[in-house]
Image 1 (cartoon, helix red, strand yellow):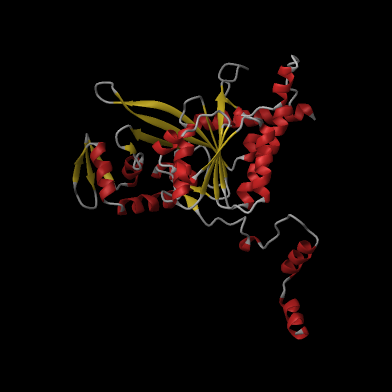
Image 2: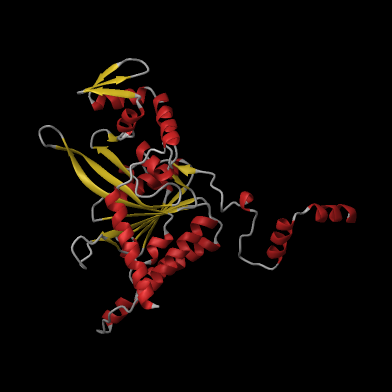
Length: 367
């Protein structure tokens, strides 16, 4: 027995010896060879309902948002943030994740989640606008045994400190001196911990506000300064209407730009189309890439599939053709990987660079 233990000791490399030494003296810390780490390595991706959205999130039409990630959705009011989170939770639910909603605004309902494909009988719903109560609940999740959760926080800016109620009861309403932002920072760190240590994913909704500091200033993200640091992926959403030839509104178009992304170059843009009769169009954006890749050629309103020679009239029929020939998606996927195809929104990129420059300048002044 002693001989076998000696042999195992000899066979350990210096990195393994360091790992084991640190493990003996550490508590509550994950220490592993990186290639063997359950936290550092991604095993599962939750696929978005749009191929082009998957592309800007992961660089692949067939992947979306990876597990162990904190994804933040920002945009003006009524820009589809809650609905998008419901869609992603529904996709996660189908892949075996447990959906959990922390609702600070009382806006989620059985009818709402059912509309976007979530099963309300198999999801947990928590309502609280109080950041202190939410932190207690998150602490219990961290200490508990549950894993593989898909958590939606709607919205991060909806949290408040319970002290404001106490002050109001006493007739002594005082201005917040940054305490709420500090509490939110702790809450966000707890959410990140749940993502990484519980094989889970978190979606948080925030708001974009106009910056009154000057003409042309970029929009600012509500929810505290730490929000930008906490997110692995930050997506900006802006909604517009889709109209038919008679100017009747028949759907919604969502412009999605990644402001931050650890998995693919940021500032890429995709369009998500939602038809009120047929739902989300998974092939939106695919025709544009196909034309650039030479898979189709266009002549007026007609499109020719180069490989088969088949002629198709109108974009709607091209999308139907793509649905009937999924092998074309593989061609598009190869084209994206071979060419580094990109749809970077330069205006958003410049605005984000301006915000980052302002943040650095403010920090240097504080020092």
